[in-house]
Image 1 (spheres, rainbow, N blue to C red):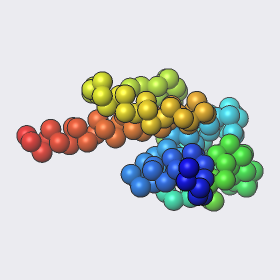
Image 2: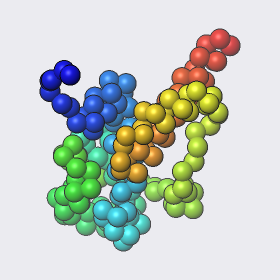
Image 3: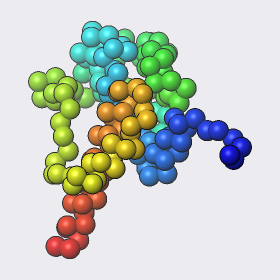
Image 4: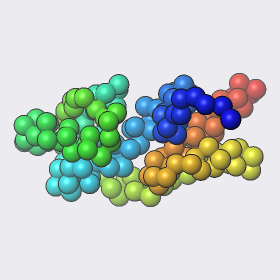
Amino acid sequence: MRRGKVEKLSSTIEKILNDRGWGAKLKEYRVFSLWQKAVGPGIARHAQPASIRGKRLTVMVDSSAWMQQLSLLKPEILNRVNDRLGPDGIESITLKFGELERADEHPEEFQPAAGKLEAGEQKRIEECIAGIKDPQTRDALKQVMEKDLLSKKRTARQQQG
């Protein structure tokens, strides 16, 4: 039996995701899904996460009054979001004035990626995520992997053209 440094599964998964360019997308999905619970329904009605670049979260705000209020609450919002994200959270929040997506325009439930994966591809994804205990992380990773595979298939078909 070989003795060596034992690495946590979460660290291994994080390395794999980052190597494949999926780490940022996974964080984005997690922030979007935890936003309302982190900030509460009152703030969530007037502000929504728009994107993450590095460790900076950009939040769209629907009015100047809310923009001013949220600029004062940035440290508290940052702490609430990071409490749910964990140690690799965000470092700053940028507020931007803009139109928000309404819940009726963007349903909360999972929307499968366009296209269809083969049984072998689906099995490979399931095997990759089987060891992840947290259901939100597992589902988010599954979505990222499915969308990535479907995107690659679409690109390959377009190139064959």
